[in-house]
Structures are given as structure tokens and as C-alpha cells.
Length: 298
Image (tube, rainbow, N blue to C red):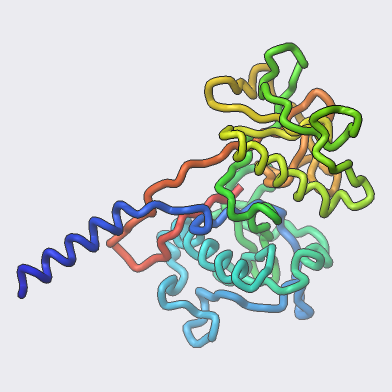
């Protein structure tokens, strides 16, 4: 019996190690910035707490704040909170007071209500910066706000690559002009025209349509150029950085894109490039009981 039990354990362990993490296991978080909060909270629901063991939002699996392993703790903590928020249909979370995570049904509209703050830190306890791709959190009454992936195609395993010039010389840096949403007279028009008035909701959907077209073609890169052109390609023929980096990319608010934004498009002569990611082995760490999922913070 003991020998059979050992064999079963080995088989289970082997299966766990062989398991791959699909997109739904990833926590893709995009940095939105550091914002003030007060007693009339911009995010009214405490989804997760690492500060108060008596709180209904305390999670034994995450545990109390691990100050000596703070970076790893915050990665696991943010990932767990992102999962809870996603299950509730929320699209942003706020990390506050070193070990609290807040959100709510209107958090995406209200998070900036009290203005920007400078009271956020990184995981090394240094002042945070919106210009770096670090992992940040607010101090007391301050949220560092993150958005959960890309609305509309959040379950596709994609990552932003960046903003790059295109000098229009053939072959193009991202070579296949798959479809466009600018000019209905062209044969590759996909039936959609740029909706400038509703750009906030239109642009995420456009990114996802380009992603879907790339996936259908078997391509692992796609890019949005000139506000509404979808270009795609493969590892073999994409040279996205050929003409250098650019700052001429814009988000859904027509503002320069934040660090590795999941919703961003190129302006004229500019590609904002995305790439499909391969599934990876799920992380297994027997040293502690931390939340074992992959997190990507941009």
C-alpha cells in the first residue's frame, strides 16, 4: 500500500510539473498610476487584505505581508486580487496601504476622482515611477492603480512589444497588411470604420479584431498603424524595430501610451506592436504556500 501511495504522489507531481499555464492563468496588469483616496472611496470593495487576519478579505493562502520577501509577496498578492476582480467583472484594481487591494463596479471610472498622488512606492520601498515597468503600491489612503489586460481579448495570451517607426519601404517592418478600418474603398476593408467619437470603447475592440485576424492567419505578431490599419507577420518576416523606436503611439484617451500599454495604436508611419505568447509551465514552488500563478505587470 505504501509503495502504491508513493507512486501516486510521484505521478501527481509529474502531472503538476508538466502542466502548462494558459492565458486565463496569467495576471496581465497595466500600470495606470498613483492616485489619492479618502473615506468616500473611489474603489469601495476591499477584495484582499494582507494586513488584518480577522478581515473577511484575508486569504490564508496569501497570508500576512512578508516584509522580508516583499517583491514576491506583492506579485502573488496582486495576481490573487486580479483574479478575484476578474471573477466579479471588474477591470481595475488599486493596491493600497502596503497590503490591501481594492476595486468595485465603477472603479474604472472613479479611480482618478481625487487626483494624482506621490505617495506610492515600489517593492524596494523607493518612490514609484509611472515611467518604469515596476510593481508599485500605495501608502495609506493611496492607490496604485492597475488595469486588467485588454477589454475584449483579455483571455488571449498576448503581450505589448512597443511603439516603432515605419519608413514605408518594402518589405514593411510588419509586412502583411491584413485589413483596415480607415478606407472602405480598399479591398482589405473589414467592414468597420474608425469611430473617433467613441474611441474609448472602439479602440480596444479594434485591437482585438487585429489580434483575431493575426491568429486566424497563423501569425504571431500584429500591429496597429495610422489609427486603423492592421498589420501582421511571423518571427521569420517581422523586423518591427528596423526603423527605430517612436513616441507617436496613443491610448484610448488619445494620450501617449503608458509603459507597455495593452490598448495602444500607432499614428502615421508608426506601428504599435503586439506579440502572441506561448503557454509556459506553471510555476511550482514547494517552499511556501504562496499563490502560484504567473503575473505580468507593465
